[in-house]
Image (cartoon, rainbow, N blue to C red; front, side, top):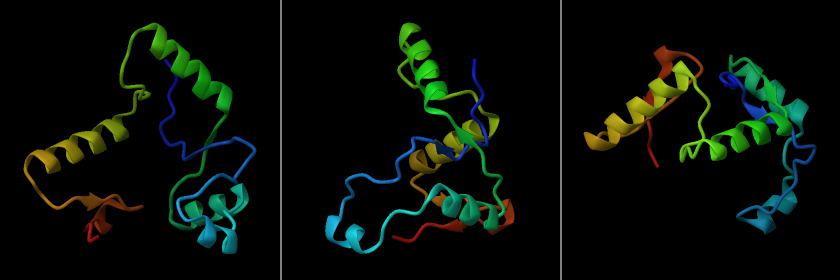
Length: 109
């Protein structure tokens, strides 16, 4: 089974698409892959990409195995899912993930 942990982007060759606010998006084009890499690395997060073929292969395997949740195995992601689920069940204010665990702050909408 493929391990996508630590990957932050799927390389599709296109950063354009239909946004939720086309008039605003027209004024501010989407960032390039290199700009995303720089922003993410500046936040202290390792930048890694996944090729679309890897995602397709993983997804097809999950469908063949009749898996509903198509989530690659990842201890880090599993911990975040457990925390999020516990937060919902306990009716707590969500905590946003940050680059360092010491910088976790409650979400304010």
